[in-house]
Image (cartoon, rainbow, N blue to C red; front, side, top):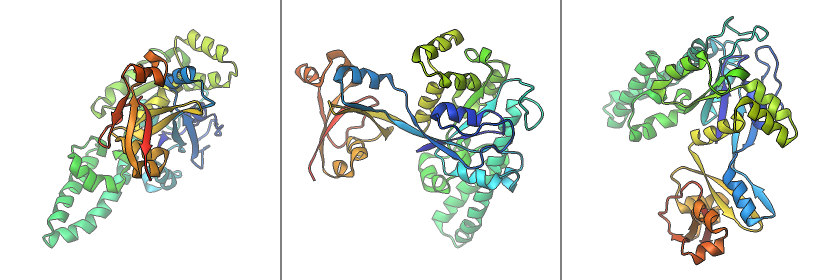
Amino acid sequence: MKAGIVGLPNVGKSTLFNCLSNAKAQSANFPFCTIEPNIGVVNVPDTRLEKLEELVNPEKVIPATVEIVDIAGLVKGASKGEGLGNQFLGNIRETDAIIHVLRCFDNDNIVHVDGSVDPIRDKETIDIELQLKDLESIEKKLDKVKRAAKTGNKEAQKEEAILLQLKNGLESGTSVRAIDVSEDDHVAYVKPLQLITDKPVLYVCNVDEGSAVDGNEYVKKVRDAVVSEQAEVIVLAVGTEADITELEDYEERQLFLQDMGLKEPGSSVLIRAAYKLLNQQTYFTAGVKEVRAWTINIGATAPEAAGVIHTDFEKGFIRAEVIKYDDFVEYGSESKVKEAGKLGVEGKTYVVNDGDVMHFLFNV
């Protein structure tokens, strides 16, 4: 699962990517400095993992990860091939969620591709290009479906009705994710199209250092503009975050954050938000060899969680021993949890909770 960072040129996408991944993507004050999408595998910050390490004292610790893709800046006309439009739109299509970076700071030294700072206009520019690309996909699909619908095929007629609903929504400027389609119809007819504006989105307002805690007027406008989308908005001073990641010493980084009025780097907040946006959650295995965070979809069952470790674990699943994270911390070890009668034994229908500490029994 991967999230793609999108936005207009020069809004801070590559600088943000560098903060997240420490993979030094080229970051320069001109459009299209990121020609090929950069991909970074980013550790998901999780204080629970640190606590388990402290209690178990394992040989190694392995965190959960999320894949972040830095995609070059889109420009007006991208859906028609302007800039490097088709290539960029193809890169976005391959991601599972979108991190949309909006410039919410004034700086005469950093050129804006449209000549002035206006995050709402920038958002609409990107939205329109993505919607136009989706409209193109839907119209192609409609041509095929209409022929089948005319023969009286009931399934094709149902699909045609859904596609027309999407087409009308996009033509009125509504992204697919905001169009009211039932869950069953979405799975059957919308999801297979892999539409760009159907992907979940997270907005990142890139602000100056002084606005990192409380935001500014630009951020307020963005929050107001995305209310109907029910999308999360994160405020991040990306340039300052980049300075923090350059500091080698942990104490120095903490002092820098304290001076800004922050408890942790904004990039950590963003990584966790991206993880959630991708519908991911974490369960743990905890032993002397390793303490590890495993990534599963929210709603995964115990056998599906076991299958993330190895497919044989899922095929031969017998049962799972489950300790709630809070119980593990309270009692301090697996053996003490067992003594207290707090270890649960769960079968195939058990839905894993975020933070469960698990051990699987299986037979191949």
